[in-house]
Amino acid sequence: MLYTHLGRSGLTVSKLCLGTMNFGPHTEEADAHAIMDQAHEAGLNFFDTANAYGGTEHRGWTEEIIGRWFARGGGRRERTVLATKVYGTMSDWPNDSKLSALNIRRALDASLKRLQTDHIDLYQFHHVDRDTPWDEIWQAVDVAVQQGKILYAGSSNFAGWHLAAAQEAAARRPVTGLVSEQSLYNLMQRSVEREVIPAAQHYGLGLLPWSPLHGGLLGGVLAQENDGVRRTEGRAASALAESRDEIQANESFARELGHAPGDVALAWLLHQPAVTAPIIGPRTSGQLEAGLRALEVSLDAEALARLDEIFPGPRTAPEDYAW
Image (cartoon, rainbow, N blue to C red; front, side, top):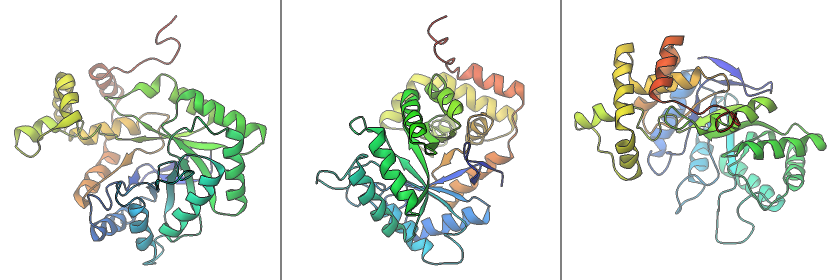
């Protein structure tokens, strides 16, 4: 396993992060426990979840599954860098969502109870809250840090200027602020290269890309359809229709390299200097094994240039749209 620091922090995490969103709704608890054990056996120490994961009928389900896994002992909690999130609506009552000081306090305590742990290593804001001032958010985080309930704070789905606002408010207190940003980032969706990644790099935030295979479209979807293994529907079908030529070119190039398309897509992210760890969300042990293969894929400058030709990304702002 390869390891790196999370942003500018001293925290050491694996170069892949285990995403757990499928645990509960799509992956049975016993299978989820087996996947987490398998991740530890491979040296993967960084797990990501959220308080709202589990589906609308059972929010918190995923954290509960992880908590019962921790309760089995054997150093499971001690060997895990645990990341969860706050923001999502947990009930119909007011103040049970977003980033008010009240909700941060209540949501954190509820996550700790479900996860059966006394602290969260990385507590992430799942979305920007445009109605709550940063001084209020950082005050709530300060209290939680002083109580030993969280160690680091991170963000998710922030724009570049949101990162700047958060960090400048933190600097005024002064506190550490954010150490990571979790964003949608893959070969097909590279919008964050315009402003989010430059902001993250400026402030020393590690980037945690989610949906690294863009909902499976970068995982060999055309070959799977031809083999009758998979049928693409809904938004994925629309995206496939719009980008079929690029996806075909990508799958052909992966075959030239001698790798599976999904391995190449993950490896591309691992070669991006701003990226700390792509988040892989396996439903099965086999999917976890496939994700781990990407760590063995080395892409030279020529291969990276070819991928840029197939899926060209934007330039940084303002040069992307102005001189």
